[in-house]
Amino acid sequence: MGDLGPPKELVYENTYITSPEGYGKDQVFQSSKVRSVIKEVLQSMLAQLEYDPLKAAQTAKELSDQVKDRVKELGYARYKLLVQVTIGEKKGQGIRLASRCMWDTSTDNCASESFETEAIFCVAQVYGLYFE
Image 1: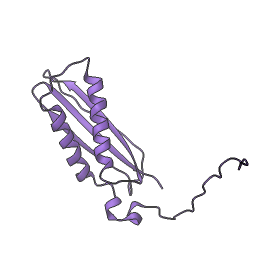
Image 2: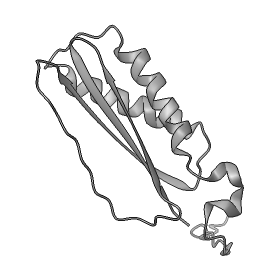
Image 3: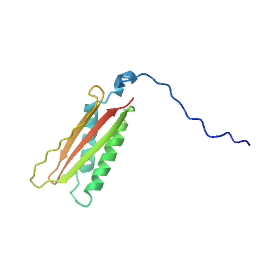
Image 4: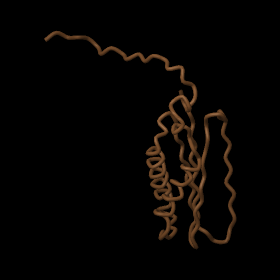
């Protein structure tokens, strides 16, 4: 048995497809579909939840993982997904969330959904950033 040496590095040819439309209309990040997914996940996981400050961080992580997995099922293969979840206790206060991003407005997009019960509030945001 002779040593064949290190494996050769794969070199891919450039496709010259610089927009998601080149891969088909279903490859464009559609915020309405993503909002529906976020809403389903928030309702299913938070409907009966009571706020626990010791478990809030873990709950937010589980929510973000669940949302990301479900959005991946929509088939946006050429998008990097960023999910941010904020969860807190309602005690009569107000809250405003804002975010700023620098992106390509022709290909990148975002979706946001909120959920409230008597005890908690939750805001989930998904950013879809197209990469070539």
